[in-house]
Length: 247
Ligand SMILES: NC(=O)c1ccc[n+]([C@@H]2O[C@H](COP(=O)([O-])OP(=O)(O)OC[C@H]3O[C@@H](n4cnc5c(N)ncnc54)[C@H](OP(=O)(O)O)[C@@H]3O)[C@@H](O)[C@H]2O)c1
Image 1 (cartoon, helix red, strand yellow):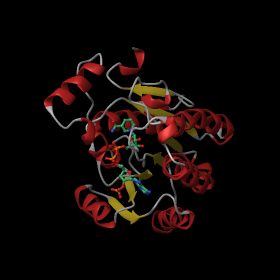
Image 2 (cartoon, rainbow, N blue to C red):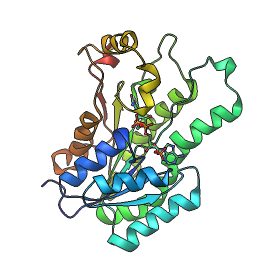
Image 3 (spheres, rainbow, N blue to C red):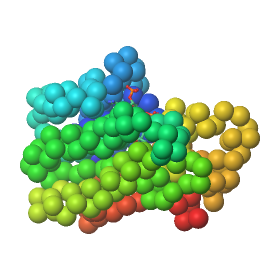
């Protein structure tokens, strides 16, 4: 087991990619604190993931984020792994159609939320020489004709550069910080774009390997970054996207 004795915290773990990440970390020996906004959903996830501990938390609220980290330390005494995964995808509109509230909402969840969790976790990760994995997106790497959600792309691009800033800043503490950019993955977030066979065929063809991804395929990449297999890897940005970003 690669992660025996490790304490991990995964945000947005009630479903989709976060659920798959939490499950694979647990299957590899970690005790996993799982968080999400919806209480019922995160409690259902806790039942399905062995050695998991659910805490409801709206990532937009500083006191709730602090509560998650405090409870983690109170219950397990330390923190080794933080996975910043929680995120939302707004309705696709052109820039001039977005109002400021919509923009702020996406930035608050997808970017400031990751700042909040990382800020609270760092003092404990310094003690364990732990690691951080940020879940960004191909949308943080490039633009898409007719498929842009500007605040989303901005939040994901910012997370890529923050990965490098944090990796450099905290290398002295032996904290490793890495980032994953998924292509389109089959989750609730992408359901609106996969409503019928025509949409599904289109999305599959967007990826050179001929299909969209499964949440577990992102989970496996996270497992690599959290394990000793990646002991000399920090500041890395790994695309896990069926080749989508090389087009
Ligand atoms: N799916 C893709 O194709 C894809 C591609 C690239 C990157 N990503 C990124 O991967 C991550 C996971 O995406 P996904 O597809 O698994 O999405 P998802 O199925 O919609 O799940 C999103 C998760 O984030 C949580 N969340 C949303 N708003 C929150 C808030 N205010 N406070 C706390 N938790 C909140 C949700 O919790 P609740 O259940 O409580 O709502 C849920 O656990 C996101 O950062 C996303 O941007 C996804």
